[in-house]
Amino acid sequence: MKSAITQIERRFDLSSSVVGLIDGSFEMGNLLFLAVVSHFGARLHRPRLIGMGCFLMAIGSALTGLPHFFMRLYEYDTYSTVPNNYSNAHIQSSNNTGTGNHFSFKVPHCLIDCVKDTGSSMWIYVFLGNALRGIGETPITPLGISYIDDFAKAENSAFYISCLQTITLLGPMFGFLLGSMCANLYVDIGFVNSLTITPQDARWVGAWWLGFFVSSAILVLAGVPFWFLPRSLPRQGEEGNENFNVDQGNKEQFVLPNTHSVKLANIAKGFLPSLKRLLCTPAYFLLLCGIVLKFSSFIGLLTFKAKYMEQQFGQSASRANFLIGVLILPVVAVGIFLGGLLMKRYKLSVVAGAQLSFITSFTAFLLLLFHFSTKCDNLPVAGLTVSYNGTPEISHDEHSLMSQCNQDCSCSTSEWDPVCSDSGITYMSPCLAGCTTFTGKGKNTVFHNCSCVLTPSPVEGSRSVSLGQCPRGPRCTRSFTSYMAVTVLSSFINSLGTTPGYMITIRCITTELKSLALGIQTLVMRTLGGIPAPVYFGALIDSTCLKWRVKRCGGRGACRMYDSNMYRVIFLSLTTCLSGCSYFFIIAVIVLLRKQFKKEEVKALQQTASKQNETKLQSPEMCHPD
Image (tube, rainbow, N blue to C red):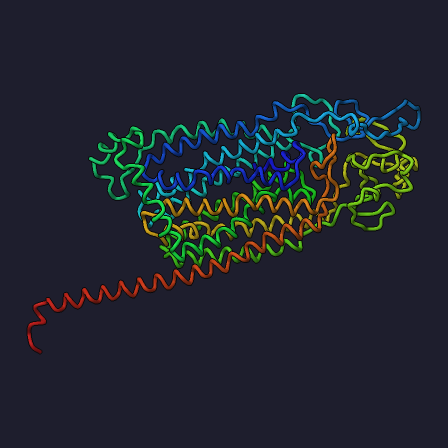
């Protein structure tokens, strides 16, 4: 879903805030059942509940990609002279020898004779499918982690959980790589012979739907083995108990709640008292507050990271997803594994683990501040970021798109079919560039005699432009290299403290509240962080848009171009502020844990000393005088 966000936004003509809402539907589905599954699931057959969740996720993934087959072919705005069904511009052309084809532009009549797109509301099915995936994912984390922790030795538990989290990252890695491949394929693959846009174009929509069907098939296969796992396992060190496997073999059948030895009604009665005990634990409550802020920053960053790389550094969606999957996620997986290995190797206590988690996370936070200095300037677009005479300006005014050089061309200011001049200035369309002739066809079309172009091109002294936005310079490429280097390094350092930080939740509460604690933590994270974060991140990103697409029947569609400088400042400031505030709560947790375990150590020493004194008093040697 993260790798398809940009494609979904353009295909359904949505704003970033609405796309953020769609992305947050996963958390909405999750929170509906998370607390119940965490509480009741710990007393039922956990592996089979996870298997049921996999099948629900498979159905949800298929439902997410289904709208593609009920929508008409994707149409993008173009002034290109290539005959296809996508052109919204009406071009009158006549063959002319020597100078190429002459044409005159007319303003499209789509606003007058509009027919509402039947697929305009199909994004609701994407929303529902993603929510169903969230429901299916509910039992995996709380029940899976507690299942492992219950039957492993205490010193091995952190190592096993880090192994699980490391392997789990193969999912996002595969997802981003699959998303990269799909983003490079045109959305209506197999139905279009000629295109005038490339994956770098703001109008490009990749085959966003394909990855969801691949994921659906894999989820069906992944859910099958869980039905054959036992309800419980012999705890490590007790494998020699032969009667265990015999007893458990007779209990393998999944029975209804009313015939189960533990009545669900009795479990329900203990829910509120257990929840009260949990939330009244100061360390756990403060940890929740810090996690919510940290998770909000993380989810907002991850949701729009590929989009940020597209808008700030001019990368295609395919390349951005590929780099995330190949460079960032593997080092995160290695970091999580090494963090669990450190805890096992040095047998770190809860306090030491909390300190390690804080140090690594804060170091990564400081490194991320360097992102403010890695930037690319706004792309020079006539009428938006620069005036037609090349003077820098930022404008949201449609009237600024018109100038003396194109006022007689009857151009539409709502169209977006960018062309690039040799002077490095991009024009929103060949009409707004004041062009009168063209040569070539398709992606190789070149427009000539453009009255708004500042510097004549070398082609026979005419002022020419070519299709597509102007590429960014080598300075921007160097900035992007620095950005990726800092991102990879900070991601690795931050991931070292993931497992120690996760173990704090498990160890700072009693054993019987373990599953509930993990469930409530996930519930609060997704309710207060996962759902609202993509929405307000998207809304703030929308505020930096310079050019919106105008829908066929009017109304605002997807954004075509952003103010890169404002995008960078708002996006990075929001992520760093949320992360920075979380450290106040984490420091408070460390202080509380130190006091708590110091008291326990003193109490344990007193008990040991008391036992030693009792032993000395009972010793026969104490009966003899000096």
